[in-house]
Amino acid sequence: MRDTSSVIDTDSELDYESDKSTKKHSLFERLYTGTGGFEIVGRRKLFYGVAAVLLLIAILSIAIRGFTLGIDFAGGSRIQLPADGVTTSQVEKVYNQALGHDAVTVQKVGSGSAATIQIRSDTLSREQTDTLQNALFTAFKPKDSNGQPNMNAISTAEISETWGGQVTHKALLALGVFVLLTMIYIAIRFERDMSIAAIGSLFFNLVVTAGIYSLVGFEVTPAAVIGLLTILGYVLYDNVVVFDKVEENTDGVLNLTKHTYAEKANLAANQTLMRSINTTVIGILPIIGMLVIAVWLLGVGTLKDLALVQLVGMIVGAYSSIFFAVPLLVTIKERFGPVAAHTKKVLARRSGALTGRATDAAAQRADAASRPVTVGAGREASASRPRGGEGPRPGTRPSGKRTKKRH
Image (cartoon, rainbow, N blue to C red; front, side, top):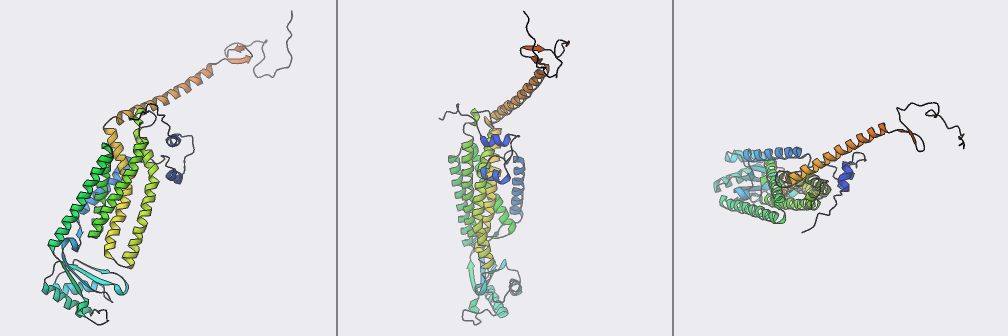
């Protein structure tokens, strides 16, 4: 075991930021140097409040709105036709007139000559499918690859509810196994309190990302599930990096009395803050590019689902690893175990040192006020001693004459 009895508690970053007489680093200097200038742990109630609001919105959205399951999960019918001069509102109207009810979704997919109108509905019978195809062909006369109106230009596909249920079961099983393996890894990788905080951060990210996805109303597709598993892996990676720094900074802190565990953890959060920002920005740039190019220009709906869940998940993950996981770890440490006693000891020592310095300064001022005034080398005159004509008046300049000693 490492001997920490001889460790000297010197943290130039913490000492610099806590010294009121020194000039503070600027915002960007504190971001890049990680000097501990951002009070993250000390303002944990604020960040807990933000996390609570996000969780509340997510849970309410999941409970009230639920999820819009894609055809791969819910089953149903999918009808496609070329979007040459056809709008989604026109198709919705024809669908309602032909079958007497509205479609689940009608959206335009792709762009240019490859654009199509995709209709998703509940499972249709063969008669309903034929009726809808005839109505769509009569209304829009879709053309085939040869440029001729053709009924075969309208394609149909059926996915049974049984198949959709199997896909849903497998997706939930994959998600559950991934989360379980992640929790096992975290429990082995970190000590108990860090494991609890990391798992809490993982579930926070999972619930908030799912809630925002529900709130936006995008369809839950296999691509969205894959994206969710991807961002959970990102959150795990980010927590490992942050907690490694916390572990490094707090090594042997209980044997020292200069800084508290919370201050050391806050320094670790500051030192990894810029790395998390850089990783998040670099990660979301291609996702934004995917949204712009694939969705707006090409109209690929599956990429839209994948891009949204990754974009939300990475942003929420960066927040949770720094502003939720680290404060949660400190809260757990200060409520249970020796960290609470150590924090009280450090604060008491710090308070006693400040009181001692104030007492010493007051004593020095009192001593200086009562100290006798020096008149000449080796002779002193008290401030209350009357002065006669033999001695020079205070403040007079020396005459330059010396009194000769008579024998």
